[in-house]
Image (cartoon, rainbow, N blue to C red; front, side, top):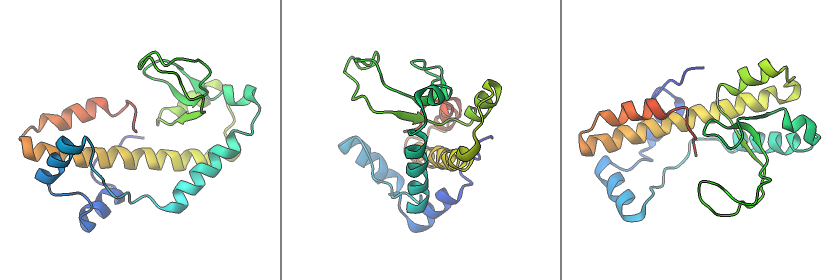
Amino acid sequence: MPVKVLKSKACQLIRESRRVPRPSLLVENIQRDRYVRVQSPTSRSLVNRILNGFTAFLTEPSEIRGLWTFNQDEPTEMGYLPRSRPMNRMTGRPYDHKDVFHFKPELWRHLSERGVFVGEYKSWLADLEFLYTEAVNVGAMLTQEIAKVYNKPSLNEMLKAARDRHVL
């Protein structure tokens, strides 16, 4: 599903509630603190459904969970990512051995091609896809706000090129 940048309900809610500081303050906060707080429009019920879905998924046997792992340790990794190695190659620090589920929209296709039956997890994946899209849209909106300060519309092009990468 293509990402509809800046047309999401999340972005509309953020704009209307003025949860994002004006562009110059946004940049000032990032420069000073290396981050900026943005209140999330994501509902608590959505977060709870996602957490409950992941908890249920983790009860599956490891053989089943392993079918949901794609491209582990590659930039395009997605799905269920058990952390079994002692060191993270990118940071050189040890992992904390937590299980991770990294959603990307193409996960649906990968699961289908592998013949994985999503069954009871279909609504969980739909919630993950919704959250993924909202995160990308909010990131795009913040990028546009920062671009206003620096007068660099090419930031949006960089965002489009990077939209398939990790969303944190």
